[in-house]
Image (cartoon, rainbow over all chains, first blue to last red; front, side):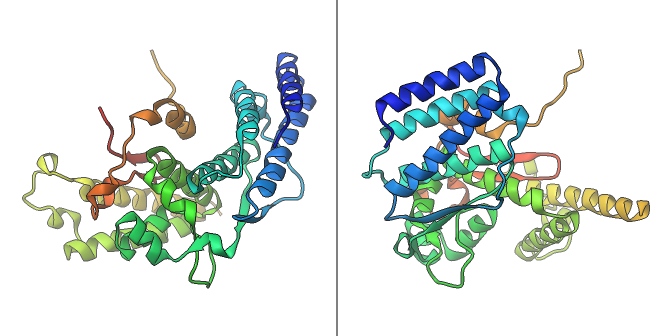
Length: 254
Length: 52
């Protein structure tokens, strides 16, 4: 944990750095807070975390973000959280910290940070599905949307906090947002197109037709209790067209 | 007046308005009792129950 004296000194240094808009000092404060979070998290949560790793050896900051008032507020908020951290943190609180760190790190650097968990902190997808009250098929759908899971051949691949975070309305969305945002950055239009096709296939199977108009023939979409399938399928068709245009355009330009 | 539509800052929206969102885990097995977020090419879709 951080001592009150260091907390106060750092708080002062952060405010000074932003007041003078001194880029090097802001970078230094940001690096310091980041390293403190990592050291304190690894020390406090030994029973959950094995290690935290980065996909780069050199930390390059997004200048626009770190100089912004948003980052100043984020730094001050992290300091307060570090002061309050205790070993009796619940899985939910730990999960929130982990996800917030992932999000903040992504904002300051546009890079990935990875968390390696202890084996006994991981549960089976079947257990997670039971705890959420959904089927295994639904859990698979959630995983594609961003429900945290480890890419491993082991049966235990869900960190315990993922279930609690999914039940939290804000962190449930945050988890999906971050996952999809990062995935989208790494994905080519061709890869996305194949996903769009796969998603459309699910609707074709469900409604037993190739055509969206046939699937919803004679139905008043606006009067439907849950029209989300119609709108999602329609959006996928639009996205398919746009991606195809993009791919064809890109190839024509070569 | 022309207005520029900036990309939505999801974390900021969640921070400001997150208190309006709800989940309903007790009415399983409906999928959409949990928040549903999907990014599309030009839009993002956000389906979640709220208290208003």
